[in-house]
Length: 212
Image (cartoon, rainbow, N blue to C red; front, top):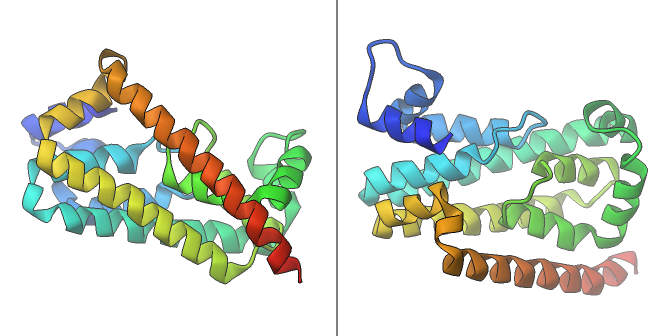
């Protein structure tokens, strides 16, 4: 997808494709893509890539793109959360793979705060909307949900936009060919591991307090 975005950024054909249209719309396109990314429809890291491309191309507006991605993601997450809360666990069984839901819900109910924070802060193979839906179906506190998603998404997108705006093509080359930059990859994996561990520890400390 990143290669397509690069080509669309360089060449603007008379009949725009979906990706070139998103680039043309700028922050508005990023906003709607982020909403879609937080739904059960996967975009395969689309908001992260589009945020980086736009911030690198228009570095003075990096904060605008970060804010658009954060707002769109928060709205999409809340819609998924509310829909799952209304439908209950049957929603998860219908939208996601069956058989794994019961185990996943048990895990989420035990480590909800940590897993929600980690999944919204760093890219993971599992769709993040699955965690949003699990939070809704398991009656996770709405205020805490919005706070966690808002803070973690803001940290993620503002970080991506800031780095892309300052390092531009170098940062985008790392996104395109991560295995060629193994040093940065190891550092990123270490940071992800630390964030996940911190989220689990935070969850372990908060859950007993919420039960009182």
